[in-house]
Image (cartoon, rainbow over all chains, first blue to last red; front, side):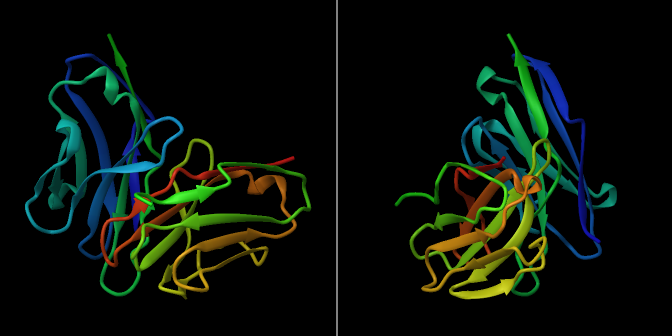
Length: 115
Length: 112
């Protein structure tokens, strides 16, 4: 069965420091991978997605993620954290290949940014 | 509208009552998805539609849950005889097809 694991339910970084949020997936077929961000009282917003093109994917707000098939990982990074990055981040996987495109989400990682 | 809208945003109901949650997708989007998110968890798939056809309802937890999208646009998720364990955030998303899903703000349901 397909699954997504996000290591660390809470991550705290200082403003200006590197952000690294970890995501590993389990899949028997090539996946499509996504990172979503959720700000308080708002819906999930797509940060970036991997759909079998370039393995290094750039998203909005300076975030990027690299698909590593050998490690079954899709970690999210940002070189320098900003206070406005404080939110909850969800990694998700989808398996197109037919008509089903529902997303399987990880449990999320809450990012705190200290001044 | 510009994005996916859901109503109501908050719903408090008593155990045993029926509730109907509405999702208005982005205009022209073919696919519509329902997810449920418990506190401290990621969203979990419930069901989805292509146009008016329900393609997959394998995530609906039991037969008290049902969904419809009669005209291929607005969708309603109905929970009959609500129970306290149904309390959660219910999220709707739409997509133009096999593409990115755009999420609405969600409906927070509290069953007393």
